[in-house]
Every structure is written in C-alpha cells, then in structure tokens.
Length: 237
Image 1 (cartoon, rainbow, N blue to C red):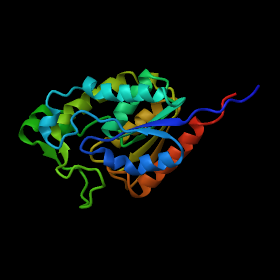
Image 2 (cartoon, one colour; image 1 turned 30 degrees about the vertical axis):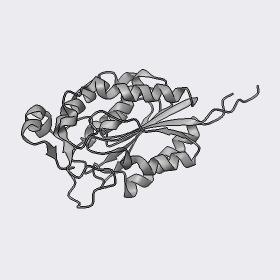
Image 3 (tube, rainbow, N blue to C red; image 1 turned 180 degrees about the vertical axis):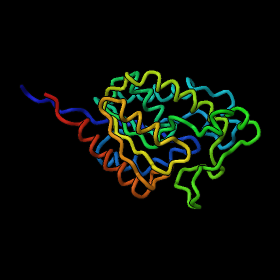
Image 4 (tube, helix red, strand yellow; image 1 turned 90 degrees about the horizontal axis):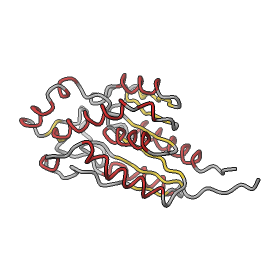
C-alpha cells in the first residue's frame, strides 16, 4: 500500500494566568522551524488590570481555545497542544473533546494552594494580585510584573474540576513537566494524574519552580515538542 505523507503538524500553545503570549515565543519559534503551524489564541482576561477578569468564566476561557483548535484542524492533519499552568487545563479540555494527537503540560494547575482555593473570591476583593510564588528576582519573558490576577483563581479552580471529572476521555500521549518546588500547582496532583492517564509520562524537575519554561525546564520542553512533532508527523500507511 502506498504511503501518504501527512500534512503539517499543528500546535496550539496556551499560556498561564499572569503570563502573556510572549512567554511562549521561544517555543513558537522552535516549532515553526520544524515546519509546524502554530497558534497562540488570545484568552479572556489578558488585560493588565484585574478588571479584565470581571465576569470571566471557565466556559469563556475554553471557547477561544476550542475555536483555535478546530480552526487548526482545517490546516493540519494532526494537532497537538502545549499548556503551562492554567493553559495545561485548557489543553486537557481539548483532548477530552477533540481527537488531538498529543499533549505537553508544564506545571498544570490541578490544585491551587489551600490558602487561595478556599477563599478565592475574598482574596480577589482585597488583594488584586499575588506574587508569582518565585523568590527569584528575574521573571521570565511574558510574565506580568504585577503578578497573578487573583480574580482568575475561581476560573482555574472551575477548570481543574471540569477537566479532572472527565480525565478518562484523555487517551492521547501526554508528557508532563512537574516542577518539584512548585508553589502554585501541587506537584503531587500532577504526578497522580500522570499515573492515572493511560499514555502519560511525568518528568520531574526536582529544583524547578512554577516558572519552568527556562533553564532545564525550557530545554526539556523543546526536546519534548520536537519528539511529539515527529511522532505526529509520521507517515500513515
């Protein structure tokens, strides 16, 4: 039987709460160099002020991601997704809905720290921003200098509940970067998810923090993206 070459591989890249698309520019460039089609959808609440999050729901957050992913299916035969933090939840939601080829998740925010999860609405009222939870002074490119808009914590909580309740629908390969020193996304929750999914593998970064897109984490991410792109682009019999 003749083999038919696949079309270009598509990638949807999803940034975290308190970050901008610029945080994923290095990954976007690397995937483009591999010949992939890359989309970074604009997410609700991306404005610099916490008021940008007023009234935003989990469904509002999913809608543009779904539109971007469906649009990419018209251009690429196989579609993969990458998500960091909150973006990892959105990537999982797409894998539960659509026949995506694979996921790469970095520091997925499956559970917020208890001090925030238990009173997220109250925190948002009196403290519009929280620090990124990283003691280092140098924030990575694309991180909001003011920190994380606390009005988005309720959205994260609802997204996590939503994707975890339907996690059995994720049947594609999943690769997960799990920072061992993550102060925002519970590493144990990520490892438990990797154990529960049928085709998942977790890579632990023992000294990594939530901002794991630079240094060792960034290098691991680029290698994972290269391998998954090759896997998604293999010839079909």
